[in-house]
Image (cartoon, rainbow, N blue to C red; front, side):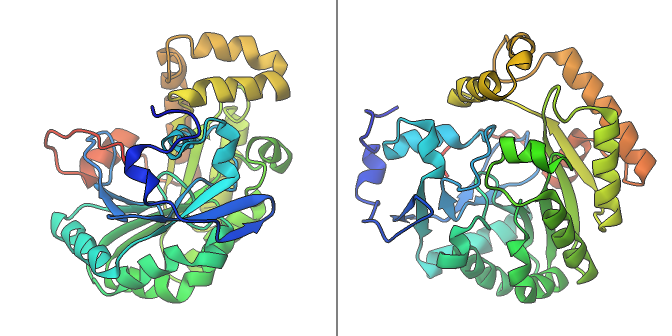
Length: 326
């Protein structure tokens, strides 16, 4: 990593001056040579990513992208939600990359690292410009992941993209417990608003899935809670549920455990034991949650498709290597 408070050499000349300041959040432009990035990791079901922003105002305590702000010179993990970088890219390059994505047949994942409909989108409309370009390329496979009902503002584009290609909106929601989520995702929209957006999307013919991610050990992993969540999403028109147990990569490990120590101190020792060997929870715990969630999904009417099945169906099988820059 680069020196604290000093952006990495590749970013220094790309960061512009402050262009907005609201809600105690600072916004700066970030010139991006490639807004559409190639992702070559066989463990993921998509081959391209678009993240219109670096940083995210929602402030989810478990966010795995939080450590990447270090490349921009931010040593304090909390700056991830207070210093937002608005990506700017040449439209011709954007179209060129999207054409390559269409030719590959692989999905373009919008919002794989930061939410494309966080509050900054209403001011800067980067995501909408990307969707306008997507609309010009019929046949493109696109997935959008968000916690925000603000996505429905782009319903005019989403309907047309869904009709001309392959589009799915992944509504990210880990629990129906609004009070719990307010502690874990302090500035994300309420669960009922996310479900209402899901229902509006599906009623308009835009396919939607539930992203029950992450499953938080000892907080959102009870069968009764997952069943209620899956049933609510099914009632809202979701065609599928996808889940994954919390993982704590890099600096997120310490940041999240500090949060647990403050907010849920009785769980700290259990978290330390569960994540004693690194980023992933202990294997038997993951296996138990996987089996339980798969069974519950089937029982509420979702197809019984595991994460591995989804990856096998949606990505060509060939050796790949992860590209970390986004």
